[in-house]
Amino acid sequence: MKKQIILIGFFLSFAFLFNFGLRAQEKTTDCRVLLSSISEKYEGECVNGFADGKGIAEGAHKYEGEFKKGLPH
Image (cartoon, rainbow, N blue to C red; front, top):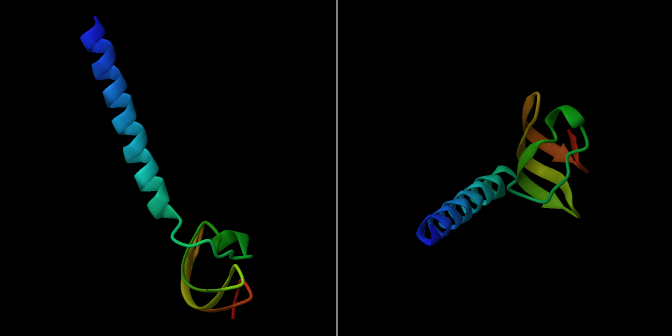
């Protein structure tokens, strides 16, 4: 019984850490994209916390190109 509890605890810990690692990869920067249809995920240049420069933003839609102050430019 004690061995089963330890095994279950180990499995749950592993599952939690694995899930946390996947979620950490989803959001690659702390830059904000102000257009809600592409604000779910952003990879690219950032200035003062906003997408600014070349980048890729995804959400319901995808935009790849230039950003200025958090908006596609």
